[in-house]
Length: 316
Image (cartoon, rainbow, N blue to C red):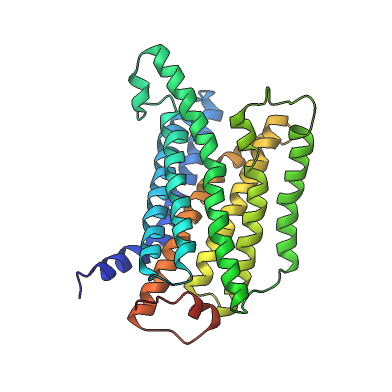
């Protein structure tokens, strides 16, 4: 059945992680060139062009791929399958991430690809601010969907007896994110004089992002350790990609905070601007790996393994 939906999805999904890897490397090379041109000429338009156009298209493209493959994963799990609700929540995470990315990287940017750019001056400024606020709010909202989905997977792993404990390196990575979160709340949230200005509803919601990242990193790490018992297979790669994406996002947040305080050199500050792109690529690669595993199981079931049984396609 060369033209069947399954064959088409398999063909498109199989090469996605490799495509994302090479696309990310090409984008980072372009970022290095634009940053070097900015440094040499002193013209910030080089860097601005990268973020407003190439970077924005990359974010939106990764979000579209993540949504597509998350939806296909959810659809392939049959009704009553224990993993179906988890992947519905992950698909909702991808959808909210896409909508937030459009608001944050297109509608709030003063660039030619922003349709709001062509409004009257007064309306233009107001809509840009509103779009930026939507982009800010979308981050914790999308994380809530992902945390709910990963919580479901952790429950399934525990119920099936495949949940594994963390290792030393896991505690190190979790400690980095947790220490930063505690420091941020002590220095910003719980201080009487807020260094980031007046407290608004948008700012309060945005403060949820860092605690949610701690929870997400713990959940993804637990699932990754459980999947690692299968070896370096497609399902394990799915959760490695989620873990990497969450950790990169956390490092990006730390970089933004350190930059605002002027506590890191320019080289590290610039690096923190670009770590968001590998994070976006990993978020898109994770469901692509899961879809490959599911379609491969349909074509020919692999050897029985505990977590493989948990994630088997019930309608195959």
